[in-house]
Image (cartoon, rainbow, N blue to C red):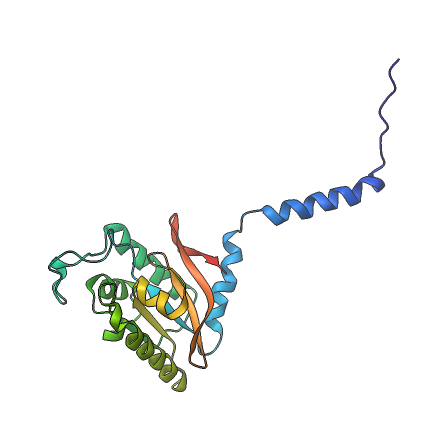
Length: 210
């Protein structure tokens, strides 16, 4: 007769079970509830949102681009317009106060800012794309830093809708379309506190990246 396997008591198995549970929890995908720290960053004083315009298929602008003429530019898709609306709803649903909405003069950025529906928007040329004019990158980035510092002095929180190249120049982050970078000024540097990346399945619940 073959020997029967020994049955270990639950007392001896508990440490093993606990270790397995800890290991499993370490690889579990983050839940939407775990996104709250990113939103909580906006409750801190002197924080702002740097936002890349919503989804606009393509890269750069067509030949013959003219500022002020949307027909000559790369514009938001229908999905991009819906994305912008939902992101605005997410901000309002959480009761986040936004005192100023500043935008690039590019149509895809200005339309994103309008569809957020957070209040009156103001065009700011410092937020304009320098994708094709990199020589203006430093001066425009310096101007945005001054704007953020001025807002801090007056106790205002702003959402700045701009472009990938502008955000990367200021923060080193390469943002997705519609991504919001929560920032604050640290001396003359723009400090990144959180990244709120639109969830393609529900733009009202952006995921958080460190």
